[in-house]
Length: 195
Image (cartoon, rainbow, N blue to C red):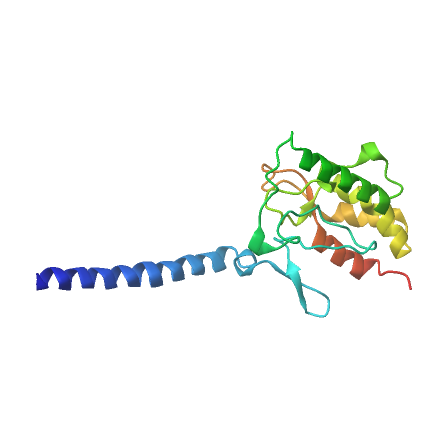
């Protein structure tokens, strides 16, 4: 009986060292080596060196001089601890009411936008509620508002959007997208709001 206890204790300790120590260190090391930015959270710094967010997680922007992300169903908005979609189906009256309210808000914020020209991601949340990207069409739909609020031409804003469009991952997966945080940082760097 004592022999069995000693063997099981030794085996537990060996597995604990391997699975709780060596394996996590190995995986972390490989991650840091192959994906140095992503493995540390893809943190984004402002001009002054402050960390202002992550390029992997959306955050709210409400001022008219900034591009707004798509709506978030995560907690009170972009709450990483409450990541979730609405889970409302296409026949849900609650979803229809939310989209209708979002359309009205978008049209009020963007008076040059026509009702039929609203991109779907402007009025619907993503599955995680934390999506940092919007479609290029969504960004272009907001260009006039941003340009007016900053006192610059809409063409300058559209040029920034074009520079920020990311293609599908590995040219295979997904659709072209624009990272809202990075685009807003570009605005502050290149098109500072007129005083």
